[in-house]
Length: 275
Length: 275
Image 1 (cartoon, each protein chain N blue to C red):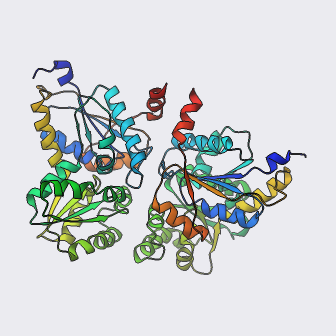
Image 2: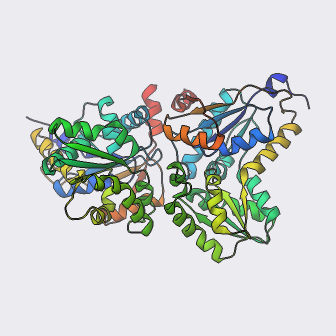
Image 3: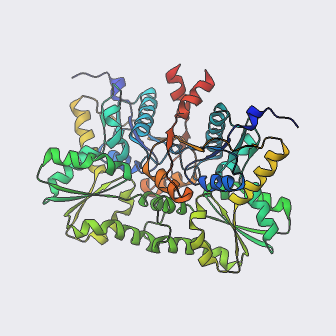
């Protein structure tokens, strides 16, 4: 398959409602060091995890349209809620990866039979992980736990804090009682709490973070489609729809370096779309 | 002053980013039993409390335009963040009340000299309460505490919970150490935590909830402008920009009755505005 060099040189577009998807962007950079990444954090409209399918689908479409307008060659939906709710509605010509399928595939590979899902309310309500897991192994038992306070706790920076410990312990309790052997971190913010979650889960439970699984699938997919960059491309770039210190603080925590942000207005994109 | 009966019969438009402003709507209903209220909860774009001045100003304008389009006779911005950040930018012919000025006036009346403000990050950063208090009494000492976890905890329904107790205790500690004598509940969600806050504050500290103060000012203002309804108007009505059980659950908690919701699309309003 032949693809023009111009297209191969395009960035991989990655978006999330906020800063959490940078955990996926970081995994992509590790797996694909030649590619450059254009990241969009839709911070003006976050969080997605408490919003309806219709609203999350509309937001996802404007985000993908924005990235397409910037000339990306592929899109990674680095938000579990958007992957769960919006991918079936998305209209685009670009190759697109979500985070649910790769995470579910990895969990189905490692589990001994009982999988716990930690996710936002909307992701849990969608049933997307259970469907993806059962499509691979119909015998699996899947238990889901909505964890609406974990994103605000991460955003507050209380990674290892007595309050966060109690909240994690409470959310994990029903899953541990049912003796899950695998826990899916079903929100891109949760890897920042992985040490705490692992501590309460104990050594007998495998944690699955979609980020590495997604990166591997994107690498294989780009290579298969002749879209992989052959030489090191430009620097990564981060856009946000609202300014704020929180994003910068957490981006530094995730990427381990300071990041310059470009403020963009998707409202304009959305309005242009109907002219 | 003569105002057409048609205008006097209009609703009072009230908006908040979410469900919290219903604490203000409830106070308005108690103070003005003849008026009917059109409430808008901008749940598709909540929360406002972590977002920038520019973004909150844009959201506030679309909300007020929506309420004006529905024929309200006045608007109450029942959101501290929007009152703090967006009122100076708002373009409208309607009389508008925010919640900061009435809350600050009440606090300035009752304090012995040292006022603590509990609010969202954006409200604290705006300095709006400190300005409003100092405009009334330049001698006041004003101490502010951002409380980003209180809204998620209220939304989770953990009103009296060990986790919420610790978070409240931690947020109050620096204010109690500085011996404030008055505490302003500077976010419309916080009245739902008033019993817990009062318990930690102790009997020597006066809690100020803007809702009652706003209702009194709106009542006086409508009467002064000849805009008060003279006979009981229609039923109150609640619009939301996104559907969700959380809103219904908390609305029942605040209004002590079930509430029917109308789903509205402000994106359309916004787009029509630029045609």
